[in-house]
Length: 105
Image (cartoon, rainbow, N blue to C red; front, side):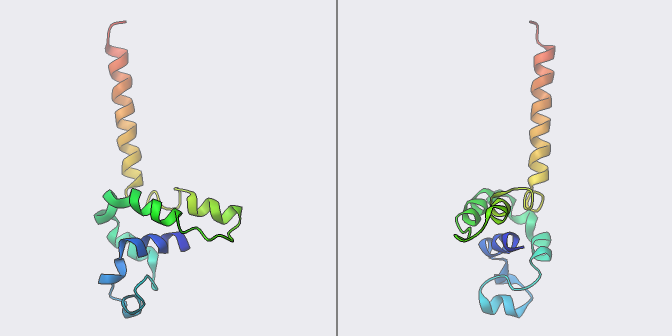
């Protein structure tokens, strides 16, 4: 939960949020999952910078499971273009394999 909220804060979704509490606080205070769903397409190109921002803000007193959640990609990869990146990677790998198998040895 805190990880997705940190991504929303990084991208500044609260600036255009319809929930007044978010705008007043200057951070995400509402339903951050819905917020990510609405805005994820527009920020896919900045996801690597956001990942570095979020990982730099891991609480110092967090335990191993929480640290894994903050460092892990599974909870956020599908939110911001992660699935499409994996599909592109799979296509490139298939093209390389096809090129290798069709070239004379």
